Length: 135
Image 1 (spheres, rainbow, N blue to C red):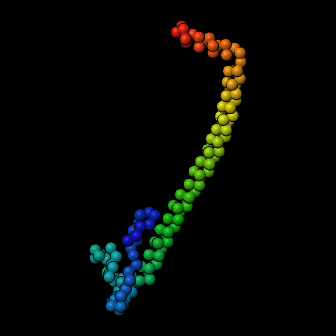
Image 2: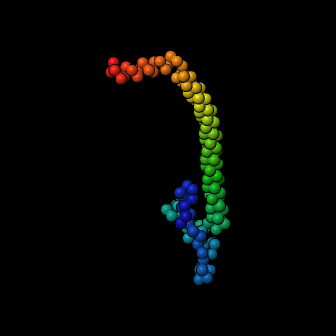
Image 3: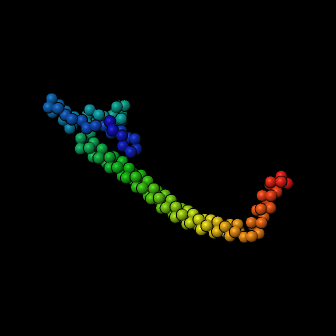
């Protein structure tokens, strides 16, 4: 058996051998599998034509395929929305990062200017002298 995306089981195809060729006809298939109401005796047994069974199976398979398609389509749409949102968030974060880099550069330049003043150099020497005297 194989599994689909929705964990439904599909049976492998049945291959008929030469010995089975004339064993069961299509009319006999309907008689072999009676309906639930026929099993409990409320209605006389009647054969369901093989074409009707095939048509019902095709209809069910088509409905399942359409449901699977709708689910997959919804997932693709959801992932696309999430991707677009994430892309916008990345753009915003990159913009914020660039602003912070500019501010950081400006702050470093201000610090360098402050450290190069005479007042800062005098204050730095005073603090070094206090540390040396343990005051």
